[in-house]
Length: 238
Image (cartoon, rainbow, N blue to C red; front, top):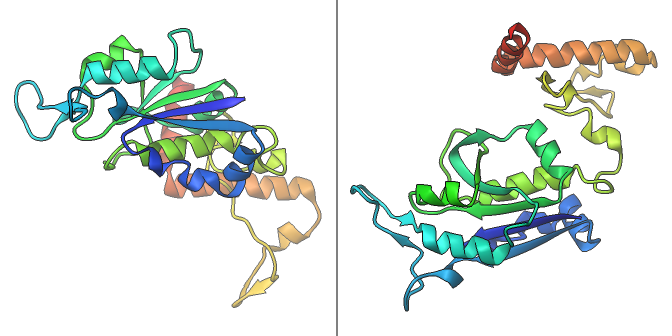
């Protein structure tokens, strides 16, 4: 079973949207599990402090390494095989390939930072893998954790209705090393405000439909995410 353990100052944010739709149904059926751990339970002193002023000066507060170490150690023993993830804007970008890899494993231990971030020493001391969901700043790691878990859970066996549903989407089209955006989708009515479904999709010729979809996926990627194609070219050149 895929097990997600989330360390946070705001456990009430979970399951949140993960308790609804596909993820929520799978959670109720015990396809996966979710537990939250309150970091403040391991805080220092009468006020359960979890942060302190940054060494060297500067704005904001930094989450303490000793507090986070205690929280992580209590959440999972050292031999827990699950990867330990820190949601961080400076982390490696979360890709569909990484999501797929995580979904095929035992789950994840996810640390949600707040304030100005965490003491650098906890990252090395507890072997945290920093992961980013985009080049922007959130108030904390919780929303990023929700996104990561949702992306993983939907790939678990028995969550989506058809296996093909997860194989013909953006970043799944093409190959693991050469992802493309998803081709355009259509459904009834056949004509909508003067815009008709492309004839090829109604032809019944599955080979031609596959070719059309492949071409459209490439053109969309070229127009909207040329960085993906540039990355692919660099990979091929190497």
